[in-house]
Image (cartoon, rainbow, N blue to C red; front, side):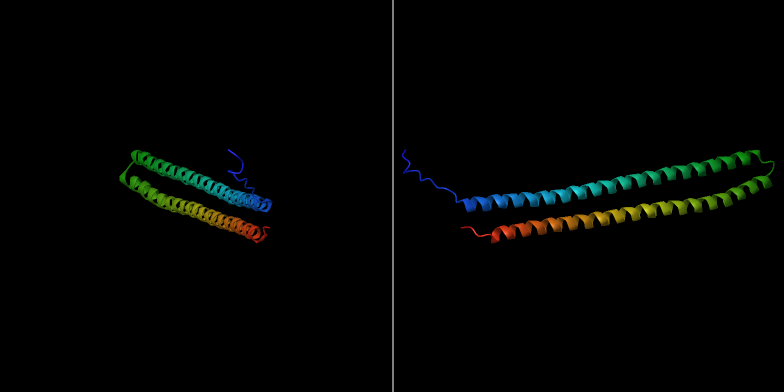
Length: 157
């Protein structure tokens, strides 16, 4: 075939420059969005780790409280078995009830404080992560928009 049948069309240099700048700007905008997403994912992972740690602490304390209460019950049982009369057994029972009431109040207060602290930390981390993600996404979007507007305003010859 002759060259007259296949016209040789050449893309103007200005159009190639514009296209290249547009691709570069799109890549930068994507990289910015991706960076924001990665930072948000890291923050979420940190929040999940904090939640796991808090859950482990709460679980551990729950077992410790249960162990204390069961040991107190066994101690009472041993005292009851060794009691010389009903009056002594009743005295041990009354002491146990007073002691356990105070222990359970203290345990509930501590457990409530731990749970409240864990929830507060989780809420603060979640709020911070959302705000950070929003700010970074907004900034990346604004940079991408500004770059696209700048590229669109440049005259092509």
